[in-house]
Length: 181
Image (cartoon, rainbow, N blue to C red):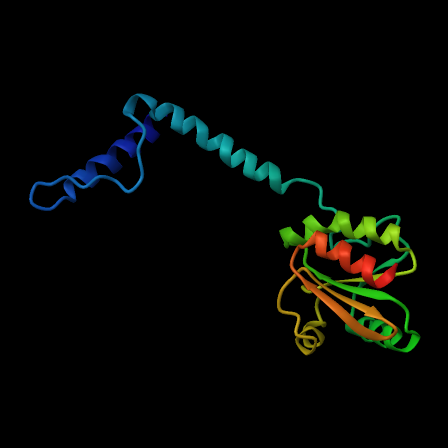
């Protein structure tokens, strides 16, 4: 506690010495009064703790495993599998979605419950989840110009009919209703 107060006081005193011609320069951010320095030091661990608590939340739709309970969602693990899926989508003319994601992507984790719910609503649409950080698929990603995640490519009758870039759940619902109802 005392160390934090000393650091705050030192920052204040250094800013006073940095003035020109006897004018004192105030710090760019407001410092608490010395009596409240202990309260400021106590607040820092709770802020850091809450940040780490957010990181330890269970990851849904993570790239480590295939989604549970969803038979129409498939995890692509290799370039050969990815090529096979693209060929299958074009040849069979079945409705499909390519979902490009990453384990570290916050917006991807935000969208995952909506994608899972829409998979249940539209069981005839197959969703293929591709983690962009997997080894061996970078060439295919460059060929498809996948430069950001989340990104969804919608296919109908063997052709790409729409694309969504970013975490826009309303647009996702609207697109699914329009294309696959």
